[in-house]
Length: 89
Image (cartoon, rainbow, N blue to C red):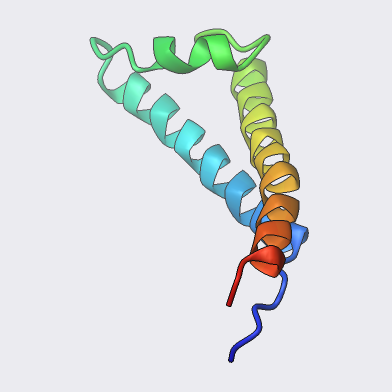
């Protein structure tokens, strides 16, 4: 019988934060390379204060994207640990 070890918030949050920040940066680069594509309109409502495009707005988008990764991890990891511990073997 194997016992599951609890996962930790910090590594999951950092991984998700970096994933979302890199995804945001790639979307911005895509939008700058292909001006006709309007991908940015999909994430503008999700990132308060971010507009298309300035240096301060791009930095704010990176920060908010990273923060969303932490938010998801703070909710997900305790829920995972709880259900993994209480699941029948």
